[in-house]
Image (tube, rainbow, N blue to C red; front, side, top):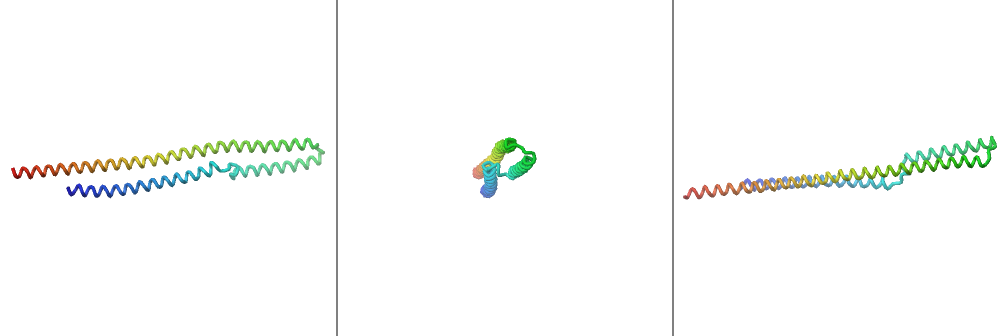
Length: 171
């Protein structure tokens, strides 16, 4: 009987430690999910054109276009080019800039899809870990309760045997 009480106290202490470990694990998973949410929001909803790689590309494009326009102005003054030919070259430069922006927009759409897919996959992994934490705790508590019931049954069996021994002594 005393061993059953002692086993129950030890099981209770183990249960409390297991609950604390489970709470710590769940808090860690919650922190990971919060960090993932923040990263997703900043990346997915951020302006793709404001990324440093895109800004560098656009700056280079502006510089090259400005340089070409200056060269064209100088060359047209020397050669006596018509205003129509200057306008045609400027139109070609504007079209190149438009195509570049279109390409950046297409890359931005692909990039957003990748960000979304990464978010979904990482969220699913965190949820799987959370589920496994709950399942492990459930299995541990189930095993502990099964062991407790088994200890009680053994204690009752010993008491029955002890009672039978006492009855036999008086018979």
